Length: 461
Image (tube, rainbow, N blue to C red; front, side, top):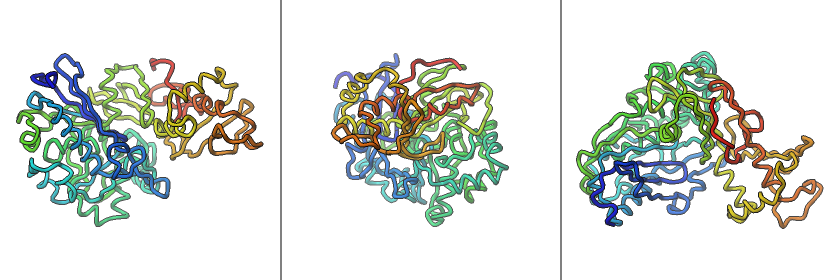
């Protein structure tokens, strides 16, 4: 308890797909406290798998917004019980999973501004959202809205030049358009639309926090050159949208002081600053201190490749976002949806949920796996747009079976007598990425497997 006392610090929050996490960092950038709440493990009542609900159509993917609020309550109560000295927190900021959106119901701002310190947040915010399950980055149900948006601005390339990306199903503008078209009543009762990042910041502010440039450029709505909302894109998605989004701000903006709720309940100082939250991918670029020409690979819930750019060249593949560190520069991103969740699923199927058992099987397989490789997409992939599990022999013959072969299963002619270890290794054969110039760092066909192993090195563009 003593190590948490009298130590001036800043808090960093992460509202990711599978958990909410906090770290406390002192003036020398030493992390001296961290904790997390895992949705599937610690909040069973919400019934998520991998932190999300995958709907029957296999395309719609959502998360309960109150699950995120309750996770924050749990962490703060654990910190309080541990004796954490909130009075020494000078500032806080954080990151949220990109492309997720939260819909605040009319009247929510009054509730945020008048929270009672005697109650937990989730107890007071239950009636504050127009929809209880919010679309997240794994959703791919808005293809029709994407085509409508592209047609409005003159095509996919025109939209990419304007907003940094062609229309993507998970991007927030298209999700808003779907909500407006399918549930106009919920849209009309929405006073504010947040990204997960600005939603999290709003909880600490006690008022609606603005969307930052970097996370906002993953919406198909922000003009990345001049950092303002595109009126053409707004109009193509829904009416009165600009007033529901508010004005975007630079990613390093101080958006206000912490809410009196946190001062009274937990002992934060009234002058504790809330710095704009941003998306998890921009936060990774900032946290890794990338410089122009560097490329980084992140193997997370989704797998991403990103780099710092001075001059953007938007294309039909990948994304250009506003740079979170320098608003005059940009970042490029490639995202692969079938990342850690896919790897964990294969681990559970093949190795009794044990990474050590999985690793032993990999080590028992010859290097190169005799030229056999596999691609694994249990949800619709982003690049390329494909779903299913596909495995190929060294002779380029595809195995038709769409599931792994468990160790105890009898081999059949359909399996071509491939042992289970072959499949474990095959999923790491599709891991090569071939960077090309600027954002055209498009993967070759062998890079698109969501089951990629760690890259051999961080390389220069």
